[in-house]
Length: 459
Image (cartoon, helix red, strand yellow):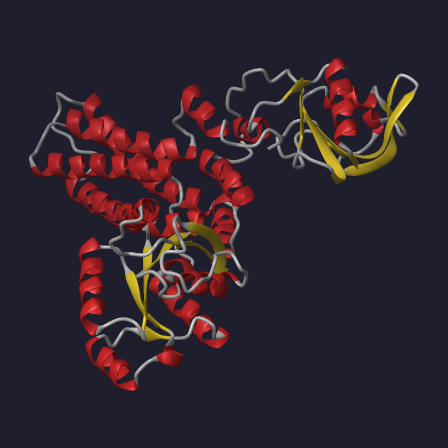
């Protein structure tokens, strides 16, 4: 069990979202959670009940009944925080919730800080730091892929990988440290060849984890996808078709979209944030010019660009010119020819010859839009995720892995340059330190405060 500050406090918070609903769940955790609740609960004596039981009764402030409730009882250590935990399910009136929380605070509880329930679970050894962070990711998951990744990490998938790496390295670290104790004798407890092989194997795994971060970022945060092209190419129509709603204004007047419009849909379990932008053209309209400038800025930060043009109103010269510009931008893009129903067959044949990967569709045709969704999904490489590989989604973990890689690389360089054991040991200790930061074996109060401050109050 890790050292726990303020572990004598009993904390309280609303565990369900703010606002009026059918029910609200108020959570307490701490040594006195059961006795504090029992003091205001009219029903069975909660101090005499078994863990993992639910009891009906009323919450009373003196003789005044505040609400009829269900009280769920979890006795330490068989709870999320490994402390005594009470969950009160009351009616979802904000007035009722507020009255009950204020009453329990007067009886001895204190308001929980952001993430304090999960922090207590971590401090009591319920799970490691990476798993604790995955709790927040699971709460915020808004797609199937994000949900699966967060659930896997919360259940220890990523942590197990890191712990295996660390355990293998600890053995050699102890052997190197032992050699330091016999510094005046010519003994070698750790074969340098074996250590080199181990470090190279660890670097291979760590490099794969580092490389998975781009995919992990897509899974966690979605794919920012810009729809770009000339004004009146059908960008707004396409966005509406993808979203299946009238999100953007559709008009025959060029330059209708003066700013960008953004919304999100799920394709194949991945969130895509589609951004309909102002057209890519020179304009004397000051407001539209600002929109075009923002379009160019959005394109630079996009993970995918859908380049859309009107088959009936664009020349092959214009198409090739704009495709060249996109290729120089260095962002993956999809070439999409719109208004297929109005196109000249000869022009289509020319485009197919010069750009075999180009898609042709009418944005008003639902079947063609569905094929477009399939193509968009293909452009996001999810092979590793689908195979069940461990995926890094957290920037803190990514940074620690980079630091670990640097330290392990220094170990190899030190062995190659025949440096003394002191320096080899120092680099190994650095590697262990950075790996330990991920799971929480190595941590600081400031780090924990920063991590758990991002959680909601009741978690």
